Length: 68
Image (tube, rainbow, N blue to C red; front, side):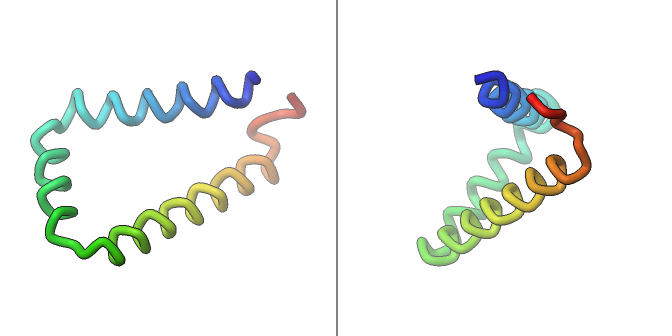
């Protein structure tokens, strides 16, 4: 349960920073995403998912998250 809270907290921190520091860039990014096809958006999402899993695996391998 602690790991879930950690993950959600980190996501909210990053999302909050983006909206607080560069809200106009978020709108530009959303406009750019609208120009992409559904298939391309799906591949971008899958690439982000794979990158996230790799980063999580690296964090575990380096012992950054401890033993629980």
